[in-house]
Amino acid sequence: MKELRIQYNSPVVLTFFLLSLGALALGEFTGERTTWLLFTVYRSPLTDPLTYLRMFTHVLGHALRPLMSNMMLFLVVGPPLEEKYGSKRLLGCIVITAFVSGLVQFIFFPTTALLGASGIVFMMIVLSSLAGMRNGSIPLTLIVVVILYLGGEIVDAVTAQDNISQLTHIVGGLCGAAMGFA
Image (cartoon, rainbow, N blue to C red):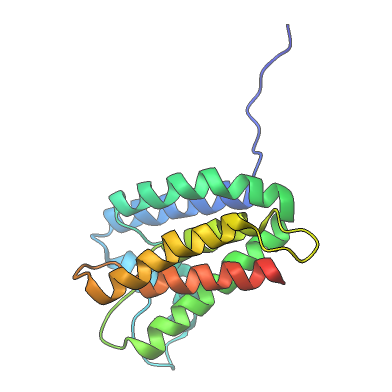
């Protein structure tokens, strides 16, 4: 009988998950001070070096329930993407999406704060729907995803009164589409 072993099969996805879990634990341990200081984008002085760090690290910050929902999708959609595109490319997509969503938040929403990986998850959803693109054809799955996910986020952006950043979801989806076509 062959010996079964656990494989760290998707290093970018699993490391991102573990870092997010660590950020949550650190936030709990410090009464959310580290979450605010390191893992949340908000309007802060450009002279503060952490302002630039937070443009990337905000995707690691979560409350428990959003972490669970984001990471479930992340852990399902991420590994096939990492296998198809490679770890370096997927990490590049995550970093670009984090920066773009952080920058949009910083510039256009000076009175609110942003944290969480939902923009990254939306990027991955759209990117995965483009994975089957061949010979210049647009997959029907992409069209359905755009209508369902991004269309729903546009409607929610206009009608919902919640603490969810639908713009971050839209930005993530647009980043996924741009990187998928590229």
